[in-house]
Image (spheres, rainbow, N blue to C red):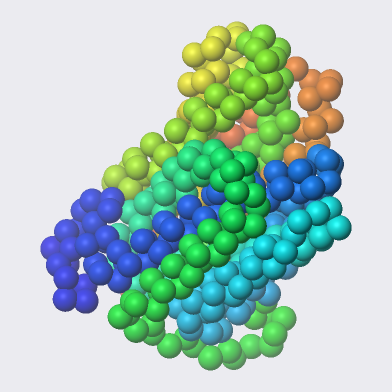
Length: 422
């Protein structure tokens, strides 16, 4: 047993940290906020499509959300230089206020308001994405970090299964402004939960370097810490193939199964269910084998899913392949996040996490338009087979670090140093 803020918490169990009041409060606020996100993000695109009649304009909603991540290090520096709980309270309240102008949108002439609000949404995502994992690493005992990260991802993936349908139904019944107000209320709920926490955040170390070096600190940490660098590079390869395969969803359904395009929804649901199950299983594997093994195994599971899809067409093989991809890919995020939290000094965690996930997902973003071209000339089974080779190679590269000594953040055992390239 371990003691934490007057509460004894079992040293095992994926969700054991939820016995602590502050963590439980945070997760309640987080769950409400994730629900708001899940219903509103799909509605934003539907709303723009409804206002303009343009598929391209609806697609620009996602661009507005992701564009701020291109300057993620700036937001991560903020997260490493101000108290994170206070930052999260302000950001959540700011997001709630930013959503309110949407109640005025009643025609195509005001669609720019939707785009502006979604850009603010992207800034909110970037700030929360940098600050939250760093805050959790100071709040949650190290042995429970993996369980929390798995629980968070399971909640997120679960709401992705339920939220879009609920959002579309709310939009059809009450319109976009109502959905925006509901989302604003969930942001306020998250801010209230953060404010009610009794946890006192440890002070952050003052800046001692130039602004340029401060901005590069997260990248320097990844480059200098070999296990983390291998996970980031391997994840970039795997998610890059994921981006290529995005445009092949309809090809798999139409060419492989002879089904109408609407059947893609069934395949996506199978992948989502796999993600939920993967999040539940991850903590036990990570406790036994460590973060590096979890990430490498997730890559191999995703590669197996691609192999099943590349096999001769079969409904059950394609659904199982999608479920396996969904099962394994979350392990890349859970393992990398936990490794950063466990081994990175507190004052660097926001920038390191931001740099790691930006580097991991940029290849996926760039690969999507490439896949849109390849789908016209390369059969889906060929590209999925290529993905098997690429993902397996990435797994082998990442797993080379599975026996490296990984000290706690800010610690090095006598006679040991952090693993570096020879």
